Structure formats: C-alpha cells, structure tokens
Length: 283
Length: 308
Image (cartoon, rainbow over all chains, first blue to last red; front, side, top):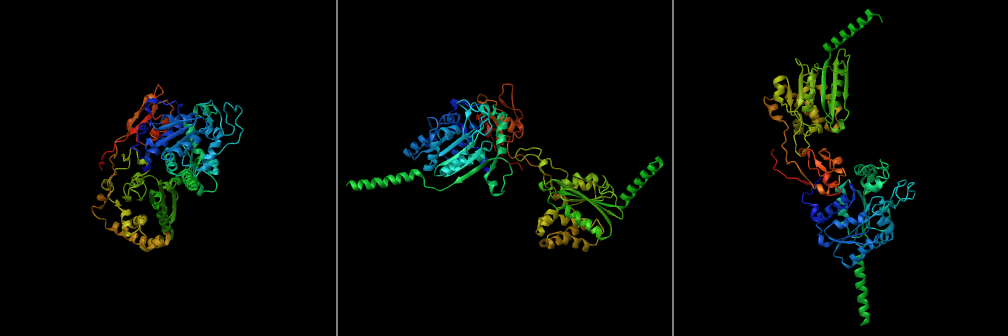
C-alpha cells in the first residue's frame, strides 16, 4: 500500500474551491475519477500551469471546470478535435481530455477514431456512466441491453460499444479501463496514461445514480459501485485462467499498448523537412 | 426393550466408559495450520499400531490453510471406545503454538497431565482486537512461568528457535515430538524410523537431529529458559488515531463513505450530512476520502514515535 500513502496530496490545492459544492448529483462517480486524475497529476509533478483540460458537454464535461488549471469547455463531442489543435500549437502543454460516453462515442465517435489513428500525445479520459445524464437520460452507445432510459422505455435493444476495443482497433497506443471503487488502481492507470507518449485512452466505469440507476432499480450509489467491482475482470487474471471465473464482462487494467510513432513530433519533422526542400528550390 | 435390560445396557455402557478412560492414554495435539499437527498425530498413531495397541485418532483442520486452528485427538491403549478425549482427561497436551495450548488447557488432566508447548507465538487475525496500525492484540498474555507455577511438569520450549538453529524452522514439530517421547514409553529408534518415513526425504537428517535435541531438552530442561523465551505480545500504537475533517457544506449525503467504512465509524445525521460517530475507531485507511465524490472528507494522519 505504499502507493496509497499520499499524505502530501491535498486535492483542494488543485480545485476552484469557490465553486464548491459542485453541481454533480449525490453519489456520482465522476468526482472519484476526478480525484484519481488529480492525484496522478500530483504524483507526476505536473504543474497546473503546464496542464490543459479540454472537455465537451455533459456531466463529464463539467468536471474540468472545477480544476484550477487551464480549461477549455468546448462543443458537444468535439473536445478531441479542439485538443488536437491545442496540442499541435502548444506541444509543451500536457493536454488531457475529459469526456463522457455519449460525448466521446456517439457525437464525437468520429473524432475519437481519428485521434486514435493519428496517435497524438493526448490523454483521453472517458467517464462511462452508460447514459446521457445532463441532457435528460437518453440512451448512449454504452448503455447495457435491456436498460431503461428516457428514449428506451421498453429497454435498450441496441448492441453495446466496447470503447476500449474500439480505441485499440483504431490504433490508440495505450488503452485502459478501471472502476472508480479502486481509486489507487485508477490513479496508477492515469499515471501510466499521462506518462505514455502517444494517444492514451482510459475508460472509467462511473455510476449515474440519479438518472440511470433509479430508472433501472440499481440501488443507491454504494450498491452501484460495489456491483461494478463484481462485474470486472482485472487483466492480470487473463494469464492465469482460460475462462473468466466471473460472468463479468469488463476487463480492467491496461488492455492494449503499442509503440507507434507520436504524431506531433512526426508532423513537425515532416514539415521542417518539406519546408527546407521548398526553401532550397526557391533559391 | 424391557426396563431391566435397558438399565443393564446403561450400566454396561457406563462400565465401558470407565474402563476406557482407565486404560486409554490420551494425547491432544494442537496448533495452527501448516505447523504439522496432523503429521505429529500420525506418527504417534503409527507408533502405537506398531506396538499392537488400539488407536483412535480424530482431527479437525477446517481453515488450516489460512492459519486456522488444527487439533488432533489421539487415544491409544488395549481397548479404546471413543475417538475423542473428554474434558480434563488428556494425559499429554502437545501444543505447537503457545496460545493454542492455553486454549486447550481445560482438556488436560489436572493431576497427572503433562503440558508440552512451543513458546512460539503466531498471532491470529482474530486476536487483532484493535485495528489501529500497531494496535493492541488480544493474544493470550499468560507466560510460561505462570503456567509452570500451576502445572509443575510443564515443558515450555522454544521449539521453533531450536529447529531454526538446526537449519529448518519447519522441524519445530519434530523437536516437540522429541520432548513428547519422554512422556510416552516407546523406544527411541521406533520414533526415529517413523519420523524419517513421515517427513520429506531431504529433511530426514534435520528431523533426526531435531528429535534428539528436543528429547535432550526435555530430559534436562534448562532452569530459567522458559521464562525468558515467552514475552507477552504488547504493541504500542505507532500512529495517533487519524483525524477526519468533514466539510459539511460540500457533503450531499450520498452515503458511500458510511457504507464503505470498514470500521463503521461514520453515519448520516438528521440533516443527511455525514458525521463521525466514533473518532477513536478510525484507522485512517482513507477509503472514505477516496470514494467521496464531493471531496468533503479530509483525513489528517499524524505520525508519532513508536513506543516499543
């Protein structure tokens, strides 16, 4: 538990405390995820002046507003597009995108796959609570089957997106998933993602008690986050047993990693070479 | 069955029970999982069989792999009826762990019984009555001297230490078998050959020496050895209790911290705001701080000097 000893980490140093209490519903897992993210940034010693948080619309998008750093609150589904521009213009910044399942996979699905494909040095944190919370509880691409939402009154019948498989297939160079209940593990995953050079995608299994849980009779927030724990399968188990010993379908931990060239560096080298040729030809 | 024949059966049964306790020798072997209690009782049982005695052995080793209690009743004699030893009738209690031995003392025959115990202490999780880091333990505080003043024949030896000196601390049970061999009348060679057959081949030599050392110790116990080797386990807290700071204005009463607290020392008050109900119970595990989505809980831990 040495990594869990964090007596020097004081989360209020990183928050805009004048905005508190925050707007999120009681028991919303987004707050826990935000703590893990700030804890990882603290451990890596990343200065708040050198950090940029880019977020879209939705409950997840609002979390960035509470952090006392450079924040960009942009259009629905497009935080990755804005972040790409920001990172290319200011490679010295550590750019972190906080997005939700609807924001990232539905409205911004196109931006996600192309961000993965380019492999720019960004960290994308997707807070997955299986629903569009802020906009009124509509179905999202990650809503499990037979779950009730305002737009699926008879139960969701659409196939479900596995965001991690999608990101890995599109070429993200680090893909991971964790639940909020295991905060130190989540922090370690964030650390790995932040220190990774290339596009890293982290899916955080969060809980929406008020909009999603209540409609589906999933109990209070404690019950929801404890249920998540019994539904996960840490990646380390994969090497030990052929068959998952739980029916759970969420593998957690670092799920994919590759060493593809980072787009920003590549791009600048490429441009410099082309410009040099052009200048030579002009003379 | 007529009344008279029934009463005859009862009388006969009673008679058997009396005879049984009169002729059978009772050895109770106790310890915790992994120490070799079953191996010890197996050696005793085989030895008795070799000497044409009837043996009954029964054991319990439920949670043994987790460091749980293991005990084995061994009864032998010309004729043995019951497989278990009645309270107060064990001729020998062989304890591989100190507190386990003390727990079973009421089985020992108070007049003629011999108590042979390893002074090695394995503190079970259940003894941790205070889960503050470095907190007090509920481990039995009786020392070997106190036991010896009540039971003069007691052999309390540091079998674990002796075995470690001989090169394998796992041979502690054989050291105790050596001590036991002085209380039961069987030839030393028979003990040795059975132990050699029961232990893994590469440890035969160390077990042979362990047996001899244990036997010699029991024949000439050092005068003050036991008093020195048992010191009660008393730990001073190494950390001050953690202090919880709750920002009431930020708490939304989601109840997560109350439900996840392993010490159950938080509650929601009538205003649906979290409150600490038992500040002394908090161990500073930080679960509530981590899982508070509203950042309303802060834990302050002051480290103090260990007082051990």
